Length: 128
Image (cartoon, rainbow, N blue to C red; front, side):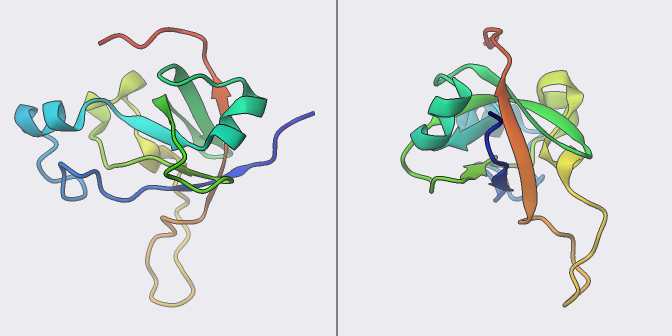
């Protein structure tokens, strides 16, 4: 049986201001790697282990991130701190690949916080 989709949110990473400062190596080093936070209840049925590469995907595309299993996020939700520049991301992609071009009905803003995604393990080690 296929696992239900997860809601993906992408707040700014602690060391960046949206995509500002990603070009500075000291901020990237402080932030580490592009990651996906996932709750243990969501990781277990998907056979995802902490630190392994996962593919986050929807009908718009995919992005590959390193899984961080944590109870600091609600079940049913995954969090991809962003926004990493594509050239600093695995496979040259970032979480914005999955964001629809639609605008919100109130305010005409991008729909950043309504991403339904599937997450699957890649079973390849992350290079560091």
